[in-house]
Length: 85
Image (tube, rainbow, N blue to C red; front, top):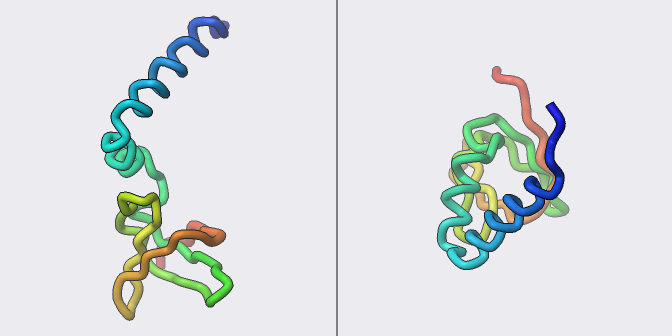
């Protein structure tokens, strides 16, 4: 059916306000909704590519990738989901 735009925007603003007032709840919610966590990824960074499984999101919002050489925290880069091997 049709979406009531006024109601949608009101609800969106209410949720935004809730998270703005409780910033500690943002990262756990992000973790729960992040489609990347649990996926094999390749993150291209200026310092080189990181390939592995995305396993977490840090409190600052960086992606944690488990590689063959250990965990790497990626704060910025182009992230691509890879097909399972």
